Length: 548
Ligand code: DGJ
Image (cartoon, rainbow, N blue to C red):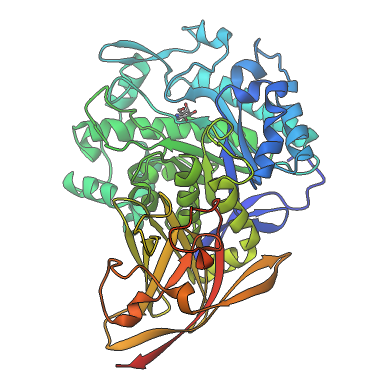
């Protein structure tokens, strides 16, 4: 390991009930954003972007470095492609996650240098049923070693010059996969597929039988829980077995590349999956072995442990359902790519409230209309304001989150014996929804005390289970954290707690017309007044129960 003046290298640690990303010796949440694919290839292009991202309260930027620009001729490296990036990110007070676009970028090999692309003997392409595809075969050892050499050299350079620990993580490749067919059918791939499933994979599956992802457990069972055999014997004869074969070969390749880099640079190495909205396994319809998709995690894990996290690119409208398979004790949840603006902001806050590391809208520099007061700036500002509290509550398991939007107007979450019924905030008089999305973080501080933060929501509270007890507000104080200190504002009560009278949800009693309202000073918004600029609220809430 090369030395830098960093005291402790960045790492992922399971602390209590959550994963923590430890950077410079302290846990941090990722208030991140990823720039467009070509932005990182020009210092001048990026120059005006860094300060805008800083103003949007980001702490981390994801920027690609391509193999073609780093090693344009074999063995000749251009360090400048990464040097300026580290310097400029640091000068703007930002951390960097480098994206290594090399053998794979979206299941294609467009970012390999020309000397690689043109040498089909040394670096064979994969073969689909329909013919050769423009993606280097995952079974090519020569390609793997060339990629690993370049990556090792890149990491060596970063270790040499990154004196402030600006690079905290590296995404190894981008959305790996095989496209056009369920598996590579080149000669080397056919030979491997005809052989036995490697012992390393079989051992991992056997040794972790109790914690396998459900899809893997079912597949093994359906094929007789064999202890050895060929790929079709162990995993079946369908495209799903082909996909496991590809996942194994992709994962082995990436583990080798990541390991070569890790020899020089101790940062968090991870890779990302292109998560499809519908897994259409018909050959050619999907990227086989497409990165570490949740149902393939066991295969990836069996291949090694240089990759510390399986990240998920989640663009779908139903963010919540797709997020959870990536968020479990075995994997730190991070989305390097997601929607921007209010949708992205709400998704990031939701993820953090469920123990995730953070979020990262893609194409952030062009998809943000207002870097200063836009929804992401506000959400990230809120997270920054209470970051140490969030982190502590994540580990203690005393935090939850809710997200609401048209089509999903109400979300119910249970914490500390109470049920929080979160609804998209309506104007009391006009019934108009005040925004397209609402999000809330709820943290339990004491048995009946909660810190609630968010935007665009109204929240009613009942007992967690129907008990006949009524829940009422014992006192609500709005406030802010300034330099980590709570600065209380108004006591909120009376009209500031009144909700629209036909608000959805169980109509328990008149008291249910009272609740929290969060829209950035929303508690004093006069009904019918024009919406204010996007903002967020923090309220400390005491509750009490009484018998009906
Ligand atoms: C997913 C890829 O990972 C990104 O690099 C980018 O190509 C987006 N899709 C689409 O813009």
